[in-house]
Amino acid sequence: MDFWFTETVNDTVGNTIKIKKRIFSGRSDFQKIEVLDAYHYGRTLILEGSVQLTEKDEFTYHEMISHIPLFTHPHPEHVLVIGGGDGGTIREVMKHSTVTRAKLVEIDPLVIEKSKQFLSFVSCEMDNPRVEVIIQDGIQYVKPYTGIFDVILIDSTDPVGPATGLYQKEFFQDVHKALKDDGIMVAQSESPFFDQQIVRELYTTLKPLFPIRKMYLAPVPSYPSGLWSFVFCSKKYDPILDNRCEDLRRLNLNMRYYNEAVHQAAFAIPNFIQELIA
Ligand code: AG3
Image (cartoon, rainbow, N blue to C red):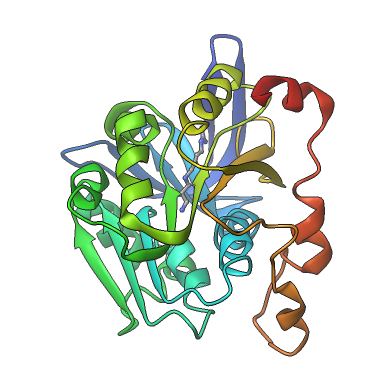
């Protein structure tokens, strides 16, 4: 039976999509999990009422969270993904043959289970032998490590509920410590239209930690405002000056959004957002 699903963005704004079928609805120890089949967007994963991904537009988010850092680092081998239990980010990480070990640390096993069951278009690489899936809170997981990861990707939900700590200083300090001396961290960083306070605080928190901090943008039509931001933090490599995206010309990696020109252009930041992060 058809129905409309609305993600409440704030007290006066919502995003509404028409649903063909409810595929799964349940509650884990951490959150409400829904998998819906939407007319326009196809299979859609919703956590605690927030759209996490849709079949139709997940490629922009997952390609951009992964390939911007992985084509900036000269030789990424050891990659950590925190969150992202749907598997979309890991799917893109696996396109890099330099990556010998990738760890996916997800707090909620039910997200992994339901993604494997209903969202194979994103979960398809989770059983790759180069991937180790760890069910744990990412905040606790990174704490003991020093200088072992080339790239850490933070594919979290909004900073409410279980993800709150993933936006805090102590966690970013631990991430910084867990990275090698030339390591890179990328985190999804919400909508520059609707989440301005979060964005502003994030850059204040990261400033003393990483010498290179740059925002980049990508469109994700199913997310609030349709414009999404990521923060690129690096100890050494600059995404514009040091990238090796010309490698793309000889690789056939099935990219639908990311390319050399997009890599550069994504770092063009409109004035009102520059003011937020200045
Ligand atoms: N994680 C970030 C989703 C944030 C969406 N926010 C919202 N709809 N209010 C996406 C996980 C995909 N691997």
